[in-house]
Image 1: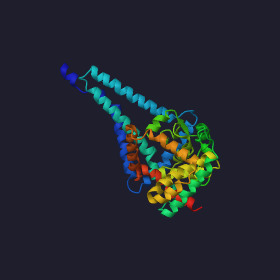
Image 2: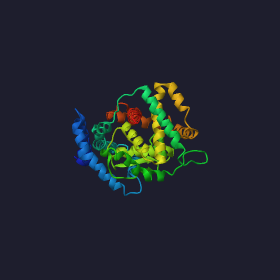
Image 3: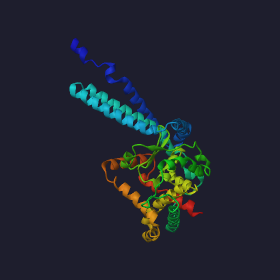
Image 4: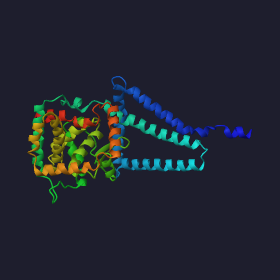
Length: 371
């Protein structure tokens, strides 16, 4: 009779709370998938009725913190998982016949994973089902001709040359401006976009610099919008010349735009209309990079001709950026991160995946080519 009692599975042995949370989170993910079916109008309602109000509230709340709440949450989550798994392994070693430890570990990890997944399904996925920037603004994002692409690429090369002489440089001739000073001006610069396209209006909040920016570089990120806190976060270690553009890109996510190519275009438009030399130069230089990459594949001769007119200052800044990122190329972490984010983008309807960051070319050509 005593042996039967020992072998009996008690309710607490199956971790009912963790199991229930896992089931509920799994159901939430399934419901999200159902809402995405068809024309996506149901998910659009989630965007306007839940995602956007939540992000506006959280962004204002977290703006009172002098650090990134997103970075803190990442650190706490990684620390918790590492410590928890280590303790569970020790417990299993000490009691090798206690398979309950293995079960509890697995159900805990499943619970955490499904809960985070469910959160993203309702806090970020709806952004890909909302009206696009192109649709709301009436900006043409259709195909462009090689001749149009060449003309606008040349325009931005000229602008980059012009603005390169207006920014502060160090003794080596490289762009040298305080990153904190750049971020202090970011929200004000964005008003050049929200003033023109009123659906981008929102609270003027400063992007957060990440302390562990080298880790961001290792994963090939210059910035990110964190759906759980509504914060915009930027890499403070990568070359500062690209920081103004990156800040405007991330603010675009915070103001409700999900598609990467559209955030790139908005960042370019805000920078170019800013009247701020640092932002104008960053906008012109980054736009030139996207356009010239497209032109390189369409007309190599035109690319060579335009590249040849870039000033020494512009070439130095481009070389610095290239050298910086080469340090992180082809690392295991970089490949895993890129692969995961590629799958994430494609899983949310951005069929170009990481290449969607270059699809802003059509918007740039139509908008600036029409001027």
